[in-house]
Image (tube, rainbow, N blue to C red; front, top):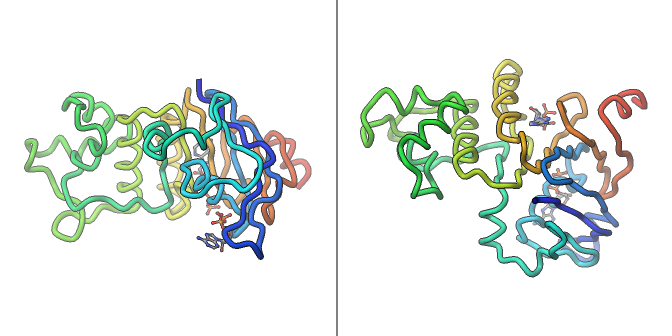
Length: 229
Ligand code: ADP
Ligand code: ADP
């Protein structure tokens, strides 16, 4: 399962300014939908609504037909994996950061996730508990390495739904390509919403929505939209 639907969603942080205006779309189970648009268009607001940081003011959001207003924030956090633009890590080992939220995971499972995200070097080098720490006191990971830790955590957690909110936009273009491959590994088979500024950075999305000033102004495949310019 895992179909996400936005039905005529309207939302405003304050009454004078409508942020989302009648937004409707579906992310079918297992598919990837990309939402592209300029800064301020309302893209991240869509992910905040999915986690119920705020509730819609009219319309509704459903997951497999169930209105999310009937679902707790905790359940939503369990069901939806999120890779943000800048991952903030705990000042602890890479292993701890990958395992975070999945304390029942075995060492083998953690290592497998680290391998898929290609960050296994950081947990294999030293015995458990003595691995390099992240943060001020320890190793300073690069932006790409931090994203790999976030990806490994998401792989380990294995949620059916996934939001990638400009997950590679803080990286240089060589690193971006690398991380993009890892992201495609995570998004395979999961319902995924990819949020991006530019159409040119979107790969392998089943449908692309263009959001401008809170409205979906175009939708189609990558080639449809490229053809329109
Ligand atoms: P995007 O992700 O497309 O850049 P956002 O969804 O983050 O856009 O923001 C859409 C608009 O909502 C922006 O104009 C932003 O300033 C405004 N906004 C975001 N969060 C808040 C908030 N908590 N209170 C008031 N306005 C907000
Ligand atoms: P930029 O700032 O370079 O325009 P964006 O803010 O548009 O980047 O970020 C969107 C990012 O989402 C892209 O850099 C890309 O790596 C990533 N991305 C695009 N399509 C997919 C996909 N189908 N699966 C996973 N990640 C994707």
